[in-house]
Amino acid sequence: MRIITGKQLSRRTVLRGLGAAIALPVLDAMTPALASPVVKRAPLRLSFVYVPNGIVMKDWTPAAAGQAFQFPRILQPLEPFRQELLVLSGLDANNGNALGDGPGDHARAGASFLTGVHCRKTMGADIRNGVSADQIAAQALGEHSRFASIELGCEDSRTVGDCDSGYSCAYTNSISWRGPSTPMPP
Image 1 (tube, rainbow, N blue to C red):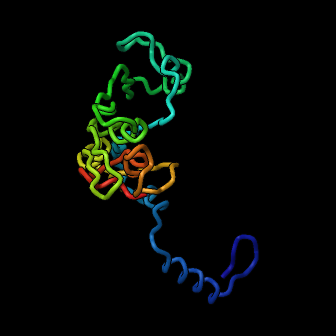
Image 2 (image 1 turned 30 degrees about the vertical axis):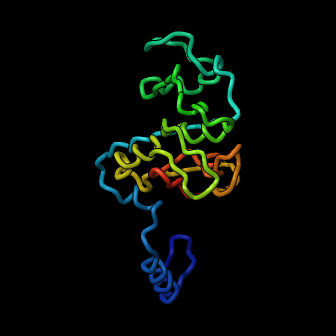
Image 3 (image 1 turned 45 degrees about the vertical axis):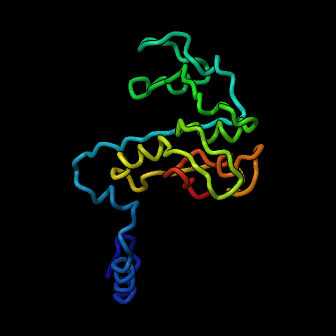
């Protein structure tokens, strides 16, 4: 077999190469090239960010409401996505307050962030919380993407014991809840 460069390849070398090429599985990276020309709409994405130590809200909150609001400095990189973005402010999480349970603000804040539920004060296995908003969205939108929900965290993974004034570590280290007593695994 002659190649344009003038170098020869033996028939055996070519057949070996073809055998290897046929044995390769179709890789995910190949599928866009092999896909039909029909353009599919990108799946809807939803992201929640929890900052347990707080932020300076005036630097994150637009000064005015409505479509013509000005992006504060921190949010300015999101300005090209204005039509696809909701900036919510002025929300209150009353169930993150003590409501007679005494200290434990950090655990309650994390537990009520996406659930809106006042969690049960316990250090044992009888933890109780609500289903979090991200998991409700995952149930509704999850069929349109490879993974219904992806949870990322940078806290330690202790989910038992007392982490905050009588509240289980599960409350302190979990903001995503599939059910009343099932935090997402670390």
